Image (cartoon, rainbow, N blue to C red):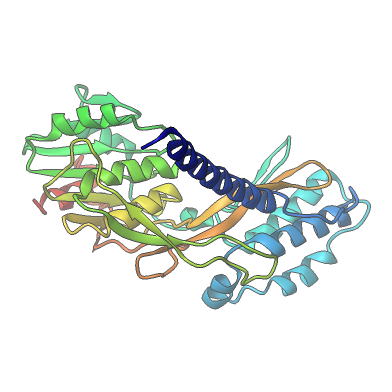
Length: 348
C-alpha cells in the first residue's frame, strides 16, 4: 500500500475517533449541565432548583410511579408550602432530604458541609443476614489478601472469596493469582454480603472470569431530554470473557439487602452464567448510574440519571431475588455457623 493511501486511511480513522470522542464529550456536557435556569440562594430558591433538577433528569419516575405510586408533582405541592424565608440551613437540609427520600433511592444524596442527606431504608428495614465475626471464624488467621479481597481454601476443598467492595481496581495479574490459588477447589463461594458497590468496571472485570463467551447481561439507557420518558434506545451490556484464568466449576454468590449499586450489577451478571447460583436474600438494588449537580447555596446533589436493566429488560432498581433464599439462623450463629456459607457448601 502506498504512502498516500496509508495516510488517507489513517486520517479517516482519526476523524472517526475524534468524532466519537466529540459526541461522547458533548453528551456528557448536556448531562452535566443539568439546569440552565438560575434560582435565588434562598430557601424557596434552593427548593425550586432541587425539585426541577430531579424532575428533568432523574430516571426512575415511571417505574416508581408503577411500583408505589410516586407522583413528583404531588411531592412539589406538599413540600413547597414547608419553605419560608426564615428557615435555617439545617431546617432547609432536613426538608429537602425528606423530599428526596420520596424517591426511595440509595443513589440520591444531598451533600453539605455539616451532613449528608441519604435514604438508607432500602436495607435498614431488613435483617442483615451478615456477621463479620462468623466470617472471621471461617477465614481464620492464615487467609490470603489481594486487591481488597480475602480468600482461602476451606477444609472441604471449597474456595471462599470475600468481596466486600468494588471500590478497588482489580489488576488482571492479581485476579490471575487469586484464581490460580483457588484452581484445585471443587467449588467457589463469593461472599458479596454488605458490598455497597464501587466501580462498575471492577464488577465487570470479576464477572469476566466466569464466562467463556460474550454474554448479554443487560441493557442501559441514557437521558436525552427533560421529559420523564426522554431516553435513548436500550444499549446492550455485554460481558466478554477474560483473557486471564477463568473459573470453570460451580460458583455460589452470597447476597443480602446491603448488596447495592455495582455489587447489584455483579449479581445481575452472574445470574446469566449457568454455573452460578445466587444464595441469600434479595439484594438492595441501585440500578441507576449516578450524576451530580449543585444548588444555588453550593450544596451538591447526586441522583440516578441512567437506568440499567437485566437481560429480560426488567429494572433491578429495587433488587434481585436469589436462586435459593436463605436467612442467617440465630441458632446457627450461636454455634459459630454461618447459615448462608453452609448452604452454599452443600451445592458442590
